[in-house]
Length: 131
Image 1 (cartoon, helix red, strand yellow):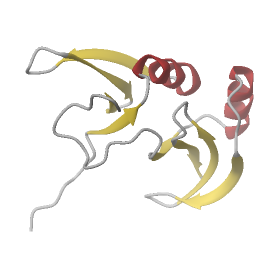
Image 2 (cartoon, rainbow, N blue to C red):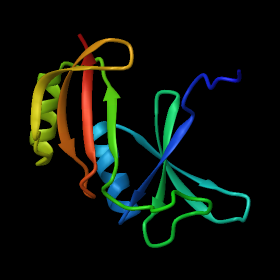
Image 3 (tube, rainbow, N blue to C red):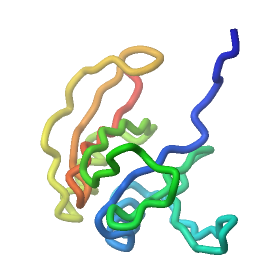
């Protein structure tokens, strides 16, 4: 039986690409990258580690797309090596509220300790350290 082995990228539908880029760069340290697709149009991605998040505008999603592309429907968990106390101070300095945590959760490979926040579209963002 064929099996997938890794996640290359995911797509996040957002209301305002520029606002989302600023948030993810400032709050989470991701790097924005413009890229050109086959039809010659320009798109944006957020890169971190070996992964990326492609950004689609909710009012003009790039086809093909999810059946109901909608800003604010995401729930993402990111791993970090930085202590969560440092994250809390960093986010507080940006005016980004931690809405829950630190709390124990179960990640893909075992126990994690997490904090939760929301991006500008209301997507739930979890930042976690392996326990």
